[in-house]
Image 1: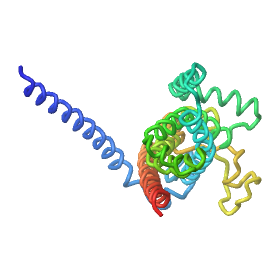
Image 2: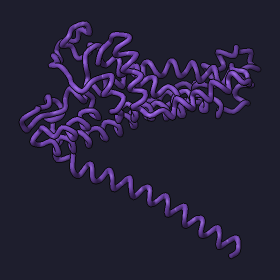
Image 3: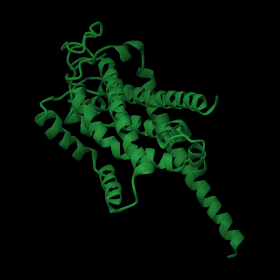
Image 4: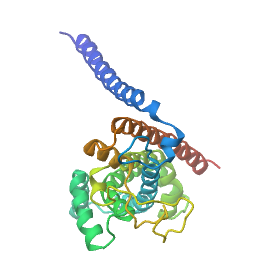
Length: 294
């Protein structure tokens, strides 16, 4: 067998793998949307769930998912940016920084259930926050920080050394070079990291069962006082997310239309993730154009 035949076989093999993965993805999405889209309606999206009768919705769970996402991103991005910038631009190459990177790798490989148990012991019990959105956001921050730190570090390191030298040659300080040259150039990679974090937040269930809880109190969406017990913005109230709700109704099976609710919630969860991905890339593209052109 000559080199051309081996190259042709390898090319066919790689194309086959790519089409297999694409086919599996299309099949999965098609099944979920075919089963769930007929269930979607404005009433289903905005109404509260029912326990013992048909016709419930997922309004509070959808709001909880987005609220938890906002809080998690607000905590994750500043910390990961600081850590990533330090490791990429300031940290010397020694055993200490190698140890930090090794610990980040270890943390990123921890199962979510283990992180959830840590959150239950520390945030729920030790800090006294109970089952709450704040506890869930903190544990998801711990869960996503290793991933986001590595994404930030890799994105900054992928910026060419010539851009760093050009900024310093103009007499700009190192920090100004980082904020005005390196970070804008690394923005597409940072947006990808934010999208990965958002997907993990939307789809996470195990860690939130032990921290955010599996129930949602009666909420008054006209009450925006975050210190009120009935306010949807209260960070110290329990909050069942869409992913936890899907797990719960499939595990308990109390609702007469549990299968339909689960299918509709799954389709809506995928649509929310796709919508966030599109918006994040669009906003990131606009920011990238604004920061890299005059």
